[in-house]
Length: 253
Image (cartoon, rainbow, N blue to C red; front, side, top):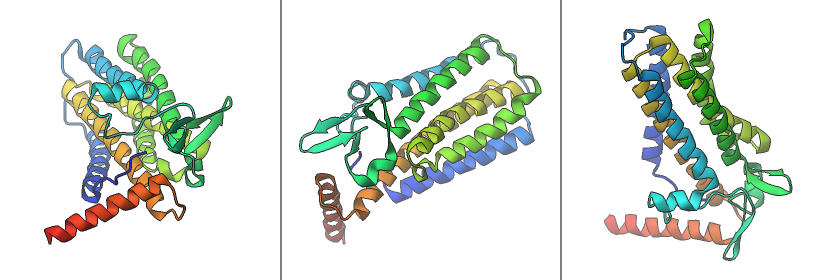
């Protein structure tokens, strides 16, 4: 669990940009101005890029330490885990601190405590990978139903931004829907417009949505610790960080 809250201005900017992206996507589909291009490798190219995003996301869930080391994030992020673990004097369950306030963030399965959000994202990535292979590489068509994919995708992505409002199994499902929704958007837009540049724009939006969802989750974790009245290592760390920031602000003044 991250110990420092993301800057409110940065988080707000990303949320607004994500919502504007969803709005622009809706307008783009309702009033298409781009014509289909003749780029023969559009589908395999876009499919490969989205597959890479899904695979890297799945690996980040099941192999967090390796991925953090690879990208130099080891010191800036706390490990995700599918099982209970111990970190010094602080016990972690499903990569969350063993605290009653984080119980809604976890589920139990097969005698293990799992992070509901990470499990949902991993399941969503598996579904999206299967769908990507079927549509972008095996040429599976969906006929006139592509409009439904775009509409459902926009709704599911928007719902994913509120995933911290859902407990347990519902949190798992919402995070699953978030990834599947992103896939639905990409599939629907590609089938409707068949334009490489528009597809790349959707890919950039998906990356923006992922970053926004990550920062919202970090904000939620930090918010829980700041409001908690229980004494623990993580809350004390939050307090020390807050005090440090206050001193720095006072010195700047």
